Length: 571
Image (cartoon, rainbow, N blue to C red):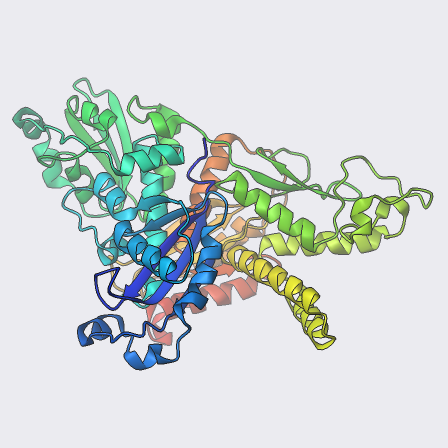
């Protein structure tokens, strides 16, 4: 049974001339393909509806009749949409999925296309079952709930991207709170009626004093029993809203939490500087104390990695699920096997690393294998490729997986142009497809590096709750090394020493094996970084001198605080 992290979920949003899928028409469509918690592909286009767009719709969406007059025809656009829908095991998802699916279905029929048989996932239904009853469930409200910025609200791509963002958050909630793992379980859950939890007057009286004192800041909370025994540990962006939601009249709670509420006699909490620090603290506390009602969180998943055997004379790229102290460089963790294998296959298609596993002793008498014949390997085994040239290719792979294109995209663009000029259109199309694939993967890696060794980055993030207050995070080898809140006039001189300690101290162990708990921590950090990539400023440490990092950090703080140059105390 497929995990919902392994299947491609196509988040769709359509803008239309009205609400009737039979009589009205689509004016714009966007498809955002998500797998393993990450956006892997996007498509969007305006469509000529050959129908008048009412003024109130134009005012809401910004799509005018003039804009769609020369837009592509529906059959042109939906031919491309149909290709996406035929991705193996693809799931159709939308916010209010019936509305979008009906318009897609009717448009395909008019274009002579047979609508594919696809599983349908509704993010509105998921939100109703997973979030507090009083929380609003429209696209804008859910984006705000999860701190997701919407670019171009009420335009297809902007809404689809936002929906994809909070869908991933909802999937994480479903996995954690309801212990859902497979796609079938998720599809069944979205339509399942959840009984309201009966919160008795006795329970309310026991906790009302604690609820009245809860702050609205991020933090970690603990539910305790009659004897002070620990029942449950959770984290919240707002302790007040999250903890109170458990004790609302007619609250819909997971069965294990509904049972736990009956035994709660007191509540403890600790405020944290940010959601990330709360996430990390919650994870560590659950692993240490193993509360009885945190059953899902006590399970440690095995996350896939890619392993580049740089300790070998002729390194190769392998798939693995642990990090050993072997001198290899590891990339990950990836949330799904499919994502890690897709990236490995892309590397194999675009870089000439050997695929054989045996130890090589270059010998001109050796007959190269099939992969050399199809130009997928330089054949160092037969001494056709020198060790020095092979390592040039290894470095390209390292930089590509670490988030640096190293010229491969420019090279392929030049090769594609040459193929087109020589009328080798088949070759040009092949290179165009490879370029699209590489750009998509490279852009994702550039946002958040997958290298465990080189994922050393300083993040600067504005705090939405406090004006001109920032959070600074030091990420070292994918794990949270340091976090601090700073104000507009905070003294910044201590960052000089902190940067030296975090990234420039001598004798730092880079190749130690990591436990599954440490891998879990890396996954939490990288997932959070990816979700907050649009809000944060990323200062990558790799190959930068100390003084450059100091200057970049100072400039980022000044810019994101939106304060005058003189108000930032020099580092």
